[in-house]
Image (tube, rainbow, N blue to C red; front, side, top):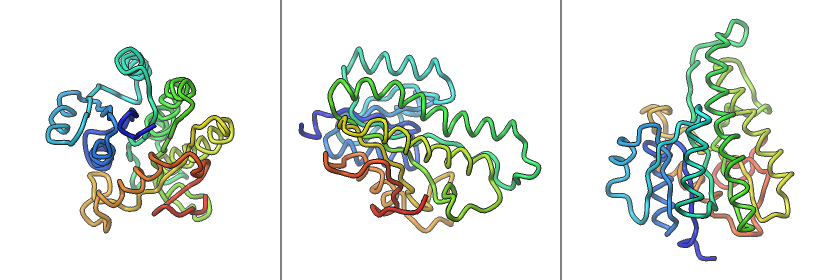
Length: 232
């Protein structure tokens, strides 16, 4: 099936990396659902984007918000082929694991892990119906156990857990036509990455779009940076 018949959902799609992913996917001809916590801000962000971009309210920390979006996708579009779990928070810079505020850790887990997990659970049945799916979990090198260090425990642990979810889902869905991968876009010039980041947002988004549009014989269950596998 041609890319212009496919539907993609991008969480946190109204700014930064998510907005550029929406731009690039829409430019490839996909119908893109931009998930935004503030629908009006989403509509403003979508102005001027190429192709067909549909803005929908989506708060990944709110289960009812996810359920409402899933119902609208099924009733209005009847399909979902690509899910980019991009929405995330980084709320504990400067914290240490030895004396962390566990309330902030729970907040990070709710947004960065459980929100993405809930979206996977509502997306996968729609993908199975069509025998095709691409799930991209936007991760970070800070989540890699191979080089795990101290600091930002909530952010690190939530993203490491998202990597584990990637492996679990990829294994359970192997052979179904649904590919599940984690992507580290690198240190990108966004609100979260800051102005000192060396990588432009376009370059970071390209890696996510690559995983979102893999061919049927593409990899699954991998962790990638610049289209190359990196250690977990």
